[in-house]
Image 1 (cartoon, one colour):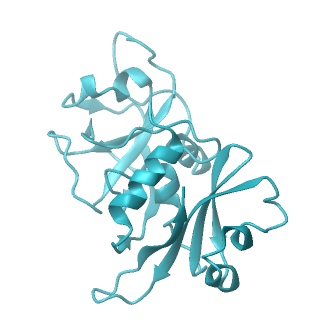
Image 2: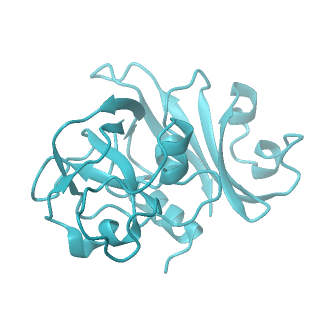
Length: 214
């Protein structure tokens, strides 16, 4: 299994020259059938920043949302935040809308791709700007903020996101300067710094990878 650092390094390799969409998550009530998204990245256990934690932070908790008559595998545990689409082929276009809801590992498996899921609870998260290779970290780092920069960094063996001021962002070449905050004494040098780009040609906010060391 790839480590968090491995997946972040691959993300940087793919997108270091691109302008990435900003993201947003909205709590909605969805009534209808949903399917697992095909090709979404594996969600490693990232303390405090997993897709599961994003659901919980937005008040969505409880058992796996898939309605079944006979429990299978790990059902009905809430093991992961599952990425869902109303498209029966599991497709989702880059940067388009999709959904996130509590799933057990059994229902989140690729073996269940193409199976229609009926929800036991309509309250889920609608995600905007999602890409198939997004991790919770890279998605959350591009969520709305007034800060001109956003940092993903490792501290005490776990990964975190943090808004970054203009002054700190200007020193992007120096990981030591970026990670010199009072609460980051255990921070390593491994990081990704995103810079916000406002007022692009289509009027949408974008992010570029300003600096990375993974």
